[in-house]
Image (cartoon, rainbow, N blue to C red; front, side, top):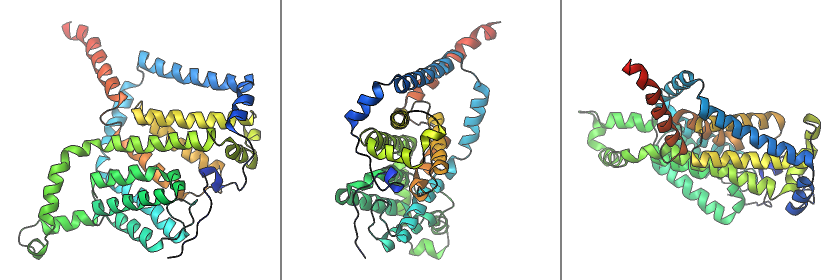
Amino acid sequence: MVWTVVPAAAHEEYVVDEERDVGLSELLGEGLADPFVVGPLVSGAVVVLAVVAGYLAFRPLQRDLATFRSAMREYVEYVPWLLRISIGIPLIGAGFGGYFVSPAVEVEFRILQVGIGFLLLFGLATRLVALLGLAVYLVGVAIWPTLLLQLEFVGGFTAIALIGAGRPSADHVLGRVAGSPGTLSRQLDPIHDRARAFRARIDSTERLLPTILRIGLGATFVFLGVTQKILQPGLALSVVDRYDLTAVVPVAPELWVLGAGLAETALGLALLFGVFTRASATTAIGMFTLTLFALPDDPVLAHVALFGMASALLITGSGPYAVDSHLERLESNLERADATPTEAD
């Protein structure tokens, strides 16, 4: 293994080499004193709150949304496969690309990362491999804190360790063979019975999968929005300058930085608390897609895990311990209240 380390870098530093000498106090001083910065920020927040309040008050498109949720539930069985692909492919790319998880950490662990990545793709010893990947990532963070830029890997590995391989996977096929009466594998396989007993013990905890995904993805958004934009405005301003974003949308550079940072933070908090989870996940996918087109030299593999986790949340919804659960109960109560006069008639 060859060990080479570069200085800490942010997602923005994947596409810029230098950082403008601008601190948080200077950004806030200039930005908050400019009505053309404060005005759009306040009006944007008001519009979002008005849309949310309008939806809660009028509850439009309920039949469409119910049909959409029903359609998404048909894909739940493929969520483990989706997560394995979303975590496995970036690890393989990192191994062959000569960096460790994040393109900002140029440390070569090719065999380790490619091995974990391929085992996840094949779905072989999936839970053990996911726990190994999580342990490797956490040790890496202790050595190179820059790996926190890929914080979503904590949620991704944990989710895979909880849910298992699903199907299609090598674990599923080998389990079927070893579990079939009369097969040689059933007589020789010492793992199958223990694995089946373990799955039976944790079946009740698999409902926490959406919660783990929400926390993993939401924490990543909050971290990136706060630390990589608001607290490091010089870096974000360099991205604005590099791509001449003020020509795309003619607003002050401070508005670009504050707007992006606050939007990412707000989206992360919405995911953390499970507020309109499917809508938040859709927004996240839209942001990733826009970023890939707006920043053509941004490494695509660095975002694959985020894409996969957001897509999984689009399928599963918020899960337990979410504001959405209370909103759904409120909507059900309102629907029953609306239906009562009709039923009486």
